[in-house]
Amino acid sequence: MNREFIVNILFLLFINLLIKPFFIFGIDLTVQNRIGSEYGLYFALMNLTYIFQILNDFGIQSFNNRHISQHPQLLPKYFPNLLAIKILLSVVYVVISLAMASAMQYESRALLLLLILLVNQVLIQMIFFLRSNLSGLGFYRMDSVLSSLDKLLMLFTCGLLLWTHPAGRTLHIEAFALAQTIPLALTAAIAYGLLRSKVRFRVRPTWANNWRAGYPTLLVLFRGSLPYALVVFLMFAYTRLDGVLLERFCGKAHAEVFAGAYRVLDACNMLGYLFASLLLPMFARMQKKVELVKPLLSLSFRLIWAGSVALAAAICFAREDLLHLMMPFHASPYRWDTLGVLIWAFVPVSTTYIFSTLLTAHGQVAAMNRFFIAGIGLNLLLNLLLMPRWQAFGAAIAAVSTQAFIAASMVGLTLHTFKWRPRLQSVAQVIGYVLFILLVNVIVLETTSFLWYVKMALCAAACLPGLLLFKWVKWGDIRQLRVWS
Image 1 (cartoon, rainbow, N blue to C red):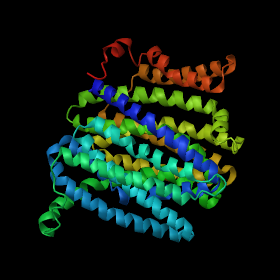
Image 2: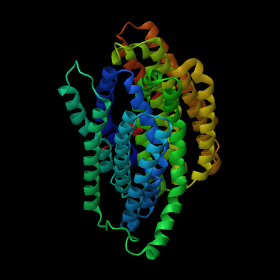
Image 3: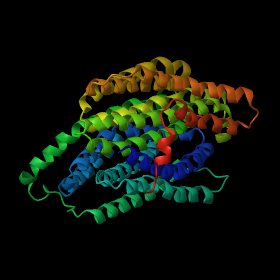
Image 4: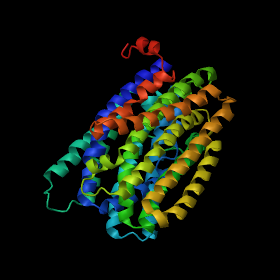
């Protein structure tokens, strides 16, 4: 299973790193540089669309991925019912989100932009749902290709928008949002076609004609999805509140500063999400073989910890030059200090992805939710204390603190659930690796005369010798790995 994980995560990383960074830093960043503070409104509304994701997703993706991995023969029975539920909930999600924005006194133009973003979120969650069926059936590489197909198509539609738009005229953010809608709809259609080619199923739900006959199935699906729905709501609440609070309390200019830093964090977090999406069906299939879980968990944690610490440190130390490259006309100490703090959230977020995925696969959702609720309270308290004085910089501190609390909670809950005790040697390796990476960064930055981006690349690449130095990966394992066999 470890070898299968390595093969598929390498393929998944290759596909996503080939496409998604071009959209994030080529398209999205260009739009922000063109429209300035207006991007702060876009960012705040985008975060608002995540607040009610409990309705848009209702935990269906996680529930479906876990159960289809364990019982693939149930897909023809579950799929039409879950699809119908998902469509109905999406309508409710759009209506409630618009009502919430109206109550927060957003103007009509903002509400129109929000409607477009809500439709995009519905399509994104539909793609996730369709992909969860494919990965649950074991089509990991097909799922990997679909994970980046929408961004590949967006490169064409959004790139065409920027290329054909006159440089002197104002670029409307609504046009940018609409340029994402068509690729998302096309990706959803392709994912549906691929799933239909693999499994035969009826699209019409069992309860469409006879409510009483379908009620038991519907009740089972609702009860099964509800704990996962709460997880979705709570996780989005403590990770997306910052942008909304900043825009409402401090203004869209400060939200735009936070958005610039969050873009880099979001790009990095993509790696953690890819690990989680691949691990969930694997952990679910291993539910009755607990002895196999620990090696896979250990391997995935070592890899994500090594990569996240090295990348966060490299970005933190090179933040000033990086922002001058990304935003040459807007770079300032306020921006790069915000990025320097916020990027460290990548380390606990990655850790949370690994351990929460295992806990989700083993049904420890209720226990996780208690910590997520505490995380929301902590995030609100820190933001209310820090935002008035330090604005986006204060929001960054609150985000890192909240993510560190959640990550520590997930690790502790995992150890308690599986009755594991961390070895002193393992703890020393984790701490030693962090000190090694920081030392490499100081040496490279202080004693070499390379260009800044060469220094940054060397600092990020320090994770490779670090893995070998602390014996997290052995040369024998690398030589024995035949990726495509």
